Image (cartoon, rainbow, N blue to C red; front, side, top):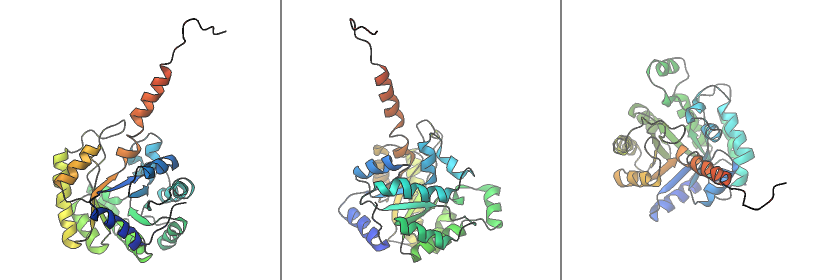
Length: 285
């Protein structure tokens, strides 16, 4: 069963890795076998997300933003039954919907901490939306503030906090009011593979946009840990580009580890088995 860390223990692990010259790698884990072998690969943080479940069922990540299931219950049960039992040492965090008006969020966070989660990330998030829909959410009391409140509750419960933002307005609000331990600029849906979004930004565009948000985050909280995520970041070479061209401390991986690690290899392995043949001279009944 996964070990639960206090916020300071969690941070000490991360900063020790950074100080010894090793960039951080945070990944999603959509089921137990993914968690088991991703941990063996040496990652620093494992995240349980409702999007991970949908990815592992063959659907696009944005399925996790649609009202098809109870996102928080899904993450709680995936963590309790599948992911946490397979993890030994790596800290595990929960991606939670802060805009969940049907739960007492403090009690729910206490339950998440009790079963072994060491941190909280505001995902799924209304920050993904913009335009009239986002304005309406905010105006009707279903806005980003609830996610900030959730992160602050998690901090009070001694859990590490991770914040997503998609634009500078939300990034500034997030950093000023929640001051998460880790800030991640979400550059958009990861491109490539069977359910990627091909129109994502280039590496150069992603790096420039990410750095603008990192500058804003560090201006408010200089010791925040910065991770790159999404869009053009698909392969290890892309991760290296982000390290070389921005001030990030590492990367967060969702589709680029859970989905792309199995799509082509699984297809190729199935095809290889289908390539077997009957040897000449061997009777088949």
